[in-house]
Structures are given as structure tokens and as C-alpha cells.
Image 1 (cartoon, helix red, strand yellow):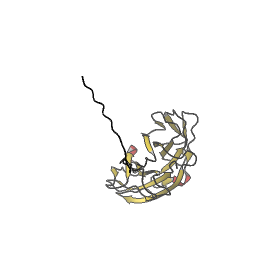
Image 2 (image 1 turned 60 degrees about the horizontal axis):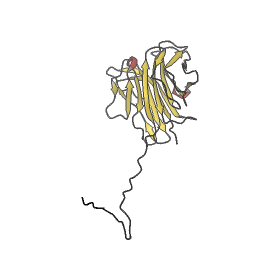
Image 3 (image 1 turned 90 degrees about the horizontal axis):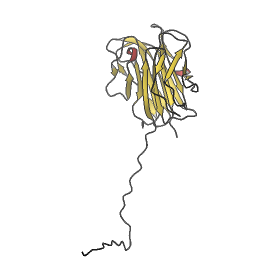
Image 4 (image 1 turned 90 degrees about the vertical axis):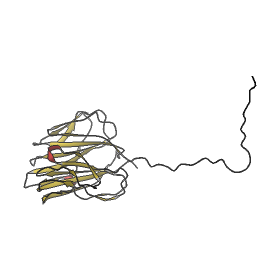
Length: 227
């Protein structure tokens, strides 16, 4: 049997035409999970390490809600600038966050409050040292069929933004074309996050549909990504 040896020789001047692909930017943050409950205990899949957990809590009195979880090591900080209220309905909305989480938490308990509804978001890729960028509120808002979240201003690109509204009746979802994703409709309210993980720095505002006119309050907060 005759065998042939094929030899390829590259010679001469110039360069071989390898294509250099452009860098593809990585996603700054990733939404790991959301969870909702109409009770004082919010159950989740086990929380990961070094993540951010944001919790929005509706209460129906003026008590100071506090949050703990079963990890024994996560601390939930209230965001003072994200405390909104609708005095006519006796509703309050408070936002909390736990930074640089310990792994394993499966339940968040809201204490010292009544009439509790809560939603949580777990996010990776957020700064573990000083994650909160900004927060804002809308209080005692007049009746409308299109309630909005407060305008929130992000200082850097790709921030994670949560916006929630407590309404008199119930919302059906975000207004078409709005940049937010509504994650839950628990207790008829609005619980959303900014959809685009690459959104440039600037002003953002959630807006929802509410088939029946009603008053409301709303809170929002933005969190910085890992540099």
C-alpha cells in the first residue's frame, strides 16, 4: 500500500488572517430568584453567597418592621429614603437589603408588623461593600389607572433597580413599552425591576396599569454593580 505524507508549509512575508473578535461585555448582574408571600414569612430557594437580597414589605400600620432570616448571619438594612405611605388607606411600603449574603438562607421573617405582604429579589454581581446608590418615594398619590413608581436616578451603567407600588385596587401589569418587568402581583400590588442589565446611567420610572382608579404609594431603589 502506498502512503502519502501531506506537508503544509507557511512561508513568506505578511500575516496569517486570523480574525480578532470584538470583546463582548459581560452582564453586570443576574437575577437569581424572586419570591413573594402574603404573610410574615417569605420562603426562598437557598440564597447564594456574596449576593444582594432586596425585600419590599407592605404593612398596614405604623410599626417598625424588622427582618431576619434563618442563616443567622445576614443583616437586613432598612432604606430610609424608600419608605413610602398612603395615609388615606393606611398603607406603608418599606424597602430593605442584605449585602454580601451568607449562603443557605431559606426563609425571611418580618417581625413587629401586621398585615404583611413581602417580595424579595436575589441578585448576583452587586457590590458587596456599599451597594445602595439611590432611593426615592411617592406618597399619598391621587387616583389613577396608571400608577407610576418614583423616578430613580442611577449614577453608573448596569445598576439593579427595584420599584414597587401599593395600590388601592389592583394592577394588571406594566404599561406596554415600559422598561420594567413586573415580577409579582401579590396582594394586587406592583413589584418590579428594571429589565435591562446593561441600562445606561440615567433616570428610570416604572408604570403599571390599574383597571380601576385608585390612590397609591410607591418606592424605588438602585444598587451598584461590581466595578
